[in-house]
Length: 264
Ligand SMILES: Nc1ncnc2c1ncn2[C@@H]1O[C@H](COP(=O)(O)OP(=O)(O)OP(=O)(O)O)[C@@H](O)[C@H]1O
Ligand SMILES: [Mg+2]
Image 1 (cartoon, rainbow, N blue to C red):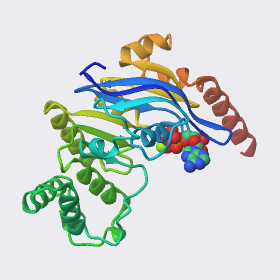
Image 2 (cartoon, rainbow, N blue to C red):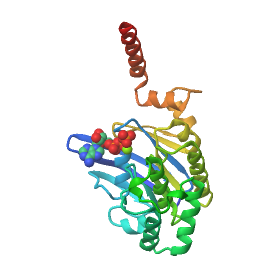
Image 3 (cartoon, protein in one colour):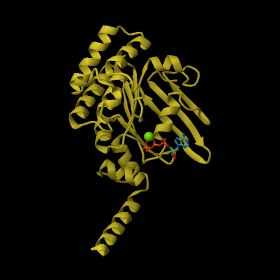
């Protein structure tokens, strides 16, 4: 194993009955890299992430994080990872204050310094006013901010983020980008999924495009353009080509326009 590889995934598979959610996926994430997973709904992004975190058992393939095995060495790995899940935060009966105290205690962090850092992050994300409010009563975007802060508080080596900015307002996205930059400047790595092409293009060093459980394109934006035979195209066009959705999108648009005209 190369020291530069934070994540290694080889021929990973996960089936749910007849559904081949992850059907032979391979990629590496290098140390210091921001690596993006793009794919249509149901492509297998979350399943891949859950396999990596040891939350699901694979049907085949190999994985390692920091050279450790996610199935056998989950605890050592989790110490060095910050995770933002795609579902809203589960600790609904706590306040952010309780949550950060709890995180400090389970992660063995110094409570005062940890909560001070958490407060600082919340201030920069315009969410400090909710510090003593029940998480259940917060808006979707504010819950998402808490998830992000909870994931970075222990200064992990690797962030694994499943659609981290879904629901964040423009300013918070800006702050989030800065937080990721700082994380990488300090030697950290990132694996994250998103549907937002602009974010992927802006933040990712490399991207894997997943479709129906398989990788259909991987590399830098320029490399993906070549793989799609679309030199100079936008990431959206490259994405639609590689996931074979470009012609169907055109047909759908034509149909919609025709039926709209008929109704008039
Ligand atoms: N627990 C489960 N039981 C059965 N099928 C599942 C389960 N979890 C995921 N799937 C199926 O696996 C496939 C991949 O789902 P996954 O959640 O990984 O997609 P995704 O790429 O994260 O999509 P999205 O962009 O909508 O979040 C889908 O067909 C989904 O219905
Ligand atoms: Mg998902």
